[in-house]
Amino acid sequence: MPNPFRLLEHRADIEQALRRVGELLAARGASYAIVIVGGAALNLLGIVARSTRDVDVLAFATRSRTRRAWRLDAPPDPLPEPLAAAIRTVGRDMGLAETWLNTGPALQWRQGLPPGFAQRVRWRRYGALWVGIADRVDLVRLKLYAAADDHPGGRHAQDLIALDPSDAELRAAARWVESQDASPAFGRVVREVVTYVRSRRGAGGNG
Image: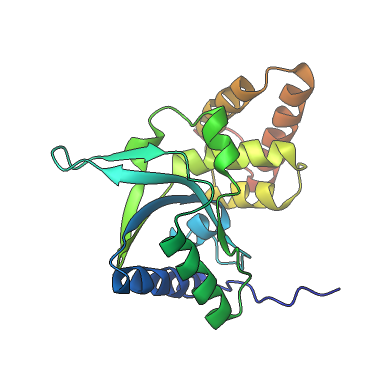
C-alpha cells in the first residue's frame, strides 16, 4: 500500500516546515531548541539534495545565560505538548506524517555521542525554534555507524559518500564506531563499509 504522506522534497521544504513550527510556538509563547541529524541535516548543510520523510531529533538543548553556550540533553518522551501540537499542525497543513519530526535517533544519545559533539553543533533560528545541526565531522561518524547497521551499499552509505570523508576522517570515524560495539563481526562490517566508501569516491590516499 503506497504511503499517503508526502516527503520533504528539498532544503526549502525542510526549512518551511521548521519555520512554521517556530511561528506556531511563538504564537503560544513557547520556545525550544533541538539538535538534528540524518537526511534533513545533510540537506540543510547543502551536502545532499534529496527527499526525506522526516527530521531526526537527536537531542534537546538549553542555553546558558552567562556563558551563552548550549547544553545538550536527551529528548523528552513524550515531546512537550506545545511542540508536539505544532508538529502535528504543520504535518497536517503540509501533508506530512504526524511524526515528520521525531526523536527516533535518541537511542544514540544513550549509547554516547562523539567527543566534542555539542561544541561543534551549528545553530539556526526559525522563529521560536532553535535548530542545531550536527557538524560534518559528526555526521561522518554517525552515518558510518548507521551504514554498518544497514548494509555497505544502502542509503546511509550513499550519504557517507556525499560527505566525502578523507581517509583520516574515515579512520577516526571507524575508531569511534567500533568503540560502540566491540564485537569482531561488527568491526568487519565497519571495515567493509569503509572499503565501499573509499572505492566509490576514488580517494586512494586522500587525507
